[in-house]
Image 1 (cartoon, rainbow, N blue to C red):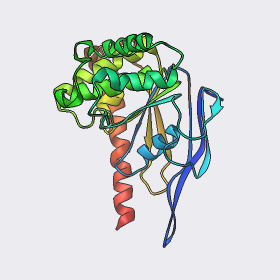
Image 2: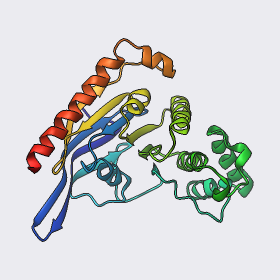
Image 3: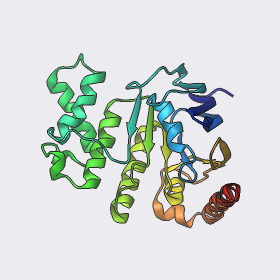
Length: 265
């Protein structure tokens, strides 16, 4: 069945001296508008490659990507991307970094109107008080909030998160998970997130896609996450299905790690 986002037989192959290196193959996934899907799997299985192809940053070898029912051709502001490191311009303030995206997608607005939009998205990530600060004066967690605000300010059809909380300490990570959960429940932006953190995926996602180990990685299993929204962390942890689903995810990853290790011997 067609979806708002369609990944159809998506594949990535690189030429090498020993012949083609198939990283991802036959990757099929449909997403509904407003759905949050997490992509998990072992390091090197191709999770970030899939996300990068959707973003238009990595050329697609096979298959196609449709976002908002339109086949993509290269990168574009219709897909907002947040990486592990937010890549802010150090000579600009937090507001100016967000303003860059606003100016790209809404050039018809006056400067004052664009500033108001930038401030709106900084407020959404609880950073309105830091609008005039430059990245060097911000903590790692605050910088990542600016990156999230900048991506959302594009008002993209799809948000792509590549381990956005992976470099943060545990407490900051939990705080940002709560911020993301709150924002995306209000905004219902169609979102794909790459993560290694099973608990993070369970807390934030509507579905979790488990990738097989590479090479030639693909969709292994897809798990529906039944926790109702809006979500509170404690309610999720106390849900009767939480630990059963968590165990299923761990078993899949352990089994594929064993298979990958055996194949390498």
